[in-house]
Length: 86
Image 1 (cartoon, rainbow, N blue to C red):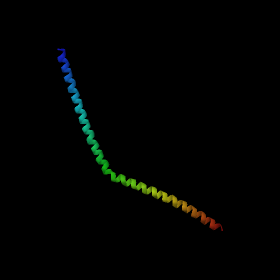
Image 2: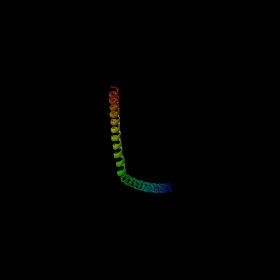
Image 3: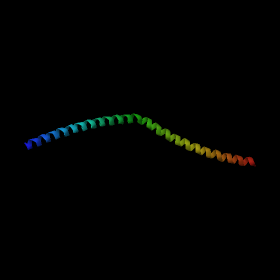
Image 4: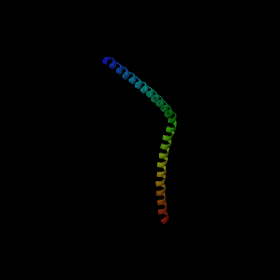
């Protein structure tokens, strides 16, 4: 009798464990699908991200050119004022 009850308990535990694993399998399948969707979306955004990086590099280069031009114009202005005083 006790052994029979133990087996029934073990059977119930196995059924519950099996159900839990099935739930976990469904969850992992959903996670996998969502990950694939995210990877596809990221891949479709990649050209825009590349453009943003390229624009950022161009802005940095333009900013450096503007600083050089500003420095040059200040030097030129100083020379002009110096010549003007003569």
